[in-house]
Image: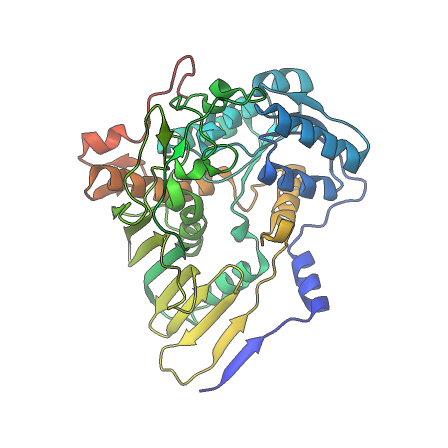
Amino acid sequence: MTSRRTFLSSATAASVSLSALPLLAADGKKYRTALIGSGWWGMNILREAIASGRITVVALCDVDANVLENGVADIESETGTAPKGYKDYRQLLTEAKPEIVIIGTPDHWHALQSIAACEAGAHVYVEKPTGHTIAESRAMVDAAKKAGVTVQVGLHRRIGPHHVAAMDFLKSGKVGKVGMVRLFAHSRGGPEQPKPNAKVPDTLDWEMWCGPAPLRPFNSKMHPGGWRGFLDYANGTMGDWGVHWLDQVLWWSGQKGPKRVFCTGGRDVVGPAILNDKEQTTDAPDHQVATFEFEGFTAVWEHRKFAGNGAEKHQVGAYFYGDKGTLHIGWKDGWTFYPADGKGEVIHGDNQLQEPEGDGHNIAALWADFIDAIDQKRAPVADIESAHRSSCLPLLGMISWRIGRSLQWDAEKEEIIGDPEATKLLRREYRAPWKYPA
């Protein structure tokens, strides 16, 4: 068997990465920009926005005074001007009047903050998944359309050079007819010990952090950073990692969604979820398998947070199984095509990732596309409609997991067919005084 690896020299890799960026005029308008959610990832996005040379940072918002103070100080150090700090995003929108709003808050806040920003006339860059529930996500799409603003969602694999190259290879027909797709993200772990609840830090507005979601006892497992494992505020690994890889399926197929979904999983290794006045654990599954039946092929998502994946060649990504071979699209391991007969060329393309703080992403390219989309009044590569469709997939998987049976899904009407109990989970009750978006 012969093998060919398409290694790129540093100069070539740089030119390919830059070619993915829209050409930005040196004298282009600078947009007044605000960040809501000023933690680690929100600040990473903002720094890429500053580096583009197309924004002026006018405001930061966070309910944690320490996080906010550090963010303001960092931006002042890096730009020479201190943005104004806010605890309440509504006050920021009214007073600072940003033209662009970056939303880097936990998932349960995405909908209300995005909709408010759209209604204020701002363009929005919001992290994935779009909403915590499907009805929230659809309301975000409707708000953007009504306001006529541009919304980019943080599905950066839509523009990452090695993802684009792999998708071009897949769409060329060289993989053949694809009948099955397997998507996965595995990591190591073991039993989880509950952590004692604690007094809310004096610098944190915990009531506002929880917002429309249930008000749990404060626990440092949730803030800062651990909220993705709590289903009141996120949708576990499938909502966090799964949306990136399930998005690849819709990008490739052009379909709006699956016909049927079934998901199973549990907490068999980490142990039962605990929540009481004294202590708590996460409550997201430590493993899940979700099957999505599409027209002409089947897609399977799987993750586990134990055992690692040393026994298999790849730990993260997507396998597209065609009658001519298998294409793996990965993260830090690029993409590789394995011919079905075992005799042809193994074709490989290395990753071309940025490294913000050692974590490989393509935020600069996604941000450049966002600004160009605003300038040119066109849809960005990860527009709110397509990102909503992709976000529906893990959210449907979570509904199936919760009720313990398969769902029939009408992707055109965005309705669960013949299951009133499951239909109720397309939305959820908000905690007063917050109102669920219409």
